[in-house]
Image (cartoon, rainbow, N blue to C red; front, side, top):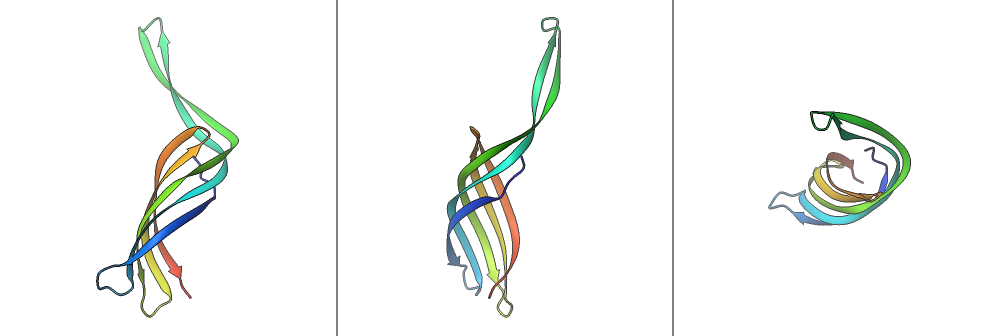
Length: 119
């Protein structure tokens, strides 16, 4: 399913990790909403020939180009390090999220490695 830009709101709590200056752990929760156009999926079908004597599977591919509205809930866990003498933050995070679109629900996962410029 193609993902579209979504507006996300996350509230995060940052905690200092042990004695390492600049290293922080963070966690949080939030929500998102957005829209996308179309989705591409397949449906597996069974074909019976002569009352259960022969059975075969085949797949039907569907290319749907309707507009969908999507919304859901997010969680986030991460670790980031602020470099002491440089204006950069290196981070890694994991974001599981629950999503609802057109009557369907799903649980998905995102992960990222980031390098951010700070000023």
